[in-house]
Length: 400
Ligand SMILES: *Cc1c(COP(=O)(O)O)cnc(C)c1O
Image 1 (cartoon, protein in one colour):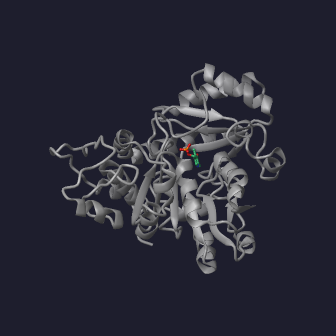
Image 2 (cartoon, protein in one colour):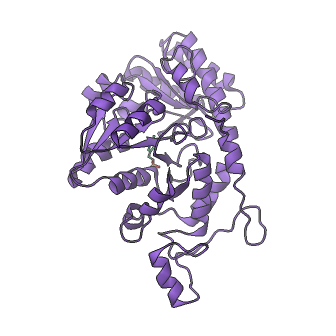
Image 3 (cartoon, rainbow, N blue to C red):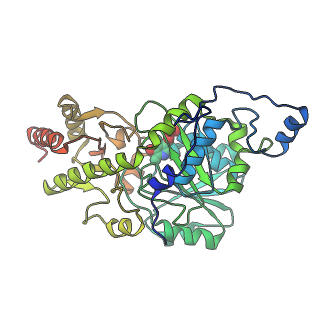
């Protein structure tokens, strides 16, 4: 495969505003004028280049952001949505009908897990959770009813790396669509280049990077994106998770520094992961040579953007995790908050927060221990300052 640089690809995407502004103009409009009734009628039948109908369908700035995201993922097309969950639910409901089945990785984002397990059955769509680390198990789980395999490129919260080329091969052979949630690793991993059919993102996280909004996107073929926004049968058109145009404009501006941020998040996370490991703590980070996914990660990642800023550490018990997180916040290491991709370090205890939708027994089976702290490592200029504070807290609490 030819080397791919997602940052160059995005920067090749150049749009001027109406007055030659270096940022494209924001169209602050829900509806658009037509010069003739005929062109209005035509635009219900098919897209007319440069013509917009209604903002739930498309508007110019959402198109600019979508096109830039398509370049990021080396996809033919993309569509932005009002949230990551809006992207995931639209994709599944577009592809699946009553009686169909989804095969999903079992360690996934809690909201996705809850949507699959509690919500989809209302529409007669069932789900089988499997260990994505075992491609053979995925192959075995596929039946005539399976329409989608769903995986996260780096999974939440145990940071397992999915062998996308292997799973994509199975998906292709069995005629099933592979959907990959790439929220944890934009730029770092390019799932479509590795064989995935559809990539979804929560833009809320790294891509926007400032924790000031919720947004999502879907990247795929022209055919699939067109089907999503079909006025008569498209999931995004009819379910309506439309991103506001003002917000699309601010996300587009943030997107253009993503390569710098991912590199720094990755450097800082690597620094902390190595330190934690040296202290003898059970540390989950795909950039560690001792990680079981290290070789796979090296094989599939784009060079130059690090191993992502997500890392997890087992503190042994929930009580240790609680105390450590409280102390770290007091010491200004970062914030005790869910979500990720912010410029400050964020930490949370997945078993008691973002993954709490997953029953306790299942958490145990997947190796999600109660004392696990998930870090979204920030953009600190000198990570050793935060590390010294964490080290002090760990000692003070007798965790090391
Ligand atoms: C946050 C998140 C989502 C959901 O995205 P929202 O923007 O909060 O709707 C989906 N997948 C992953 C991996 C996430 O971290």
